[in-house]
Image (cartoon, rainbow, N blue to C red; front, side):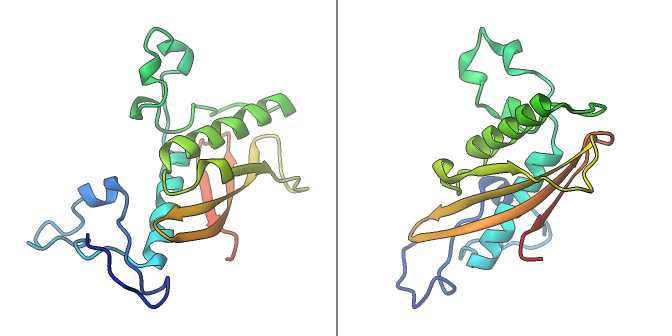
Length: 169
């Protein structure tokens, strides 16, 4: 995509993630939907969708299972969270899950600056031992765009489901 002069970041166009570009949402149409790029609003939605997909995907091999193959440690083979389903968490388990989520985001969401990604456990009174709430934040780092994005995630360890929402909702 050629670089064009834009008046504001809202007018700028960005490339969607590779998965979105490879997914054909309109197979009957001959023209690529994203050939002209996407807006900043669509970019934020694309990042949101990717984070939601990471949190709701399960990686079955553990990093320790792949010690003989260190090049696979950050490959798509380990895309998604480990299966925490059925766990009742101690504080150590919560910290392990938090670190695991942060690692996944640093590897699999390249549009966020990895040095700015933070995942913090919420100290919510409604929280049970099987539901964890996290605040996820980071700086979008695409072209000249540098803007913070913040999400709230609830991970239900009984069902394995994760719910993600923008902190501005």
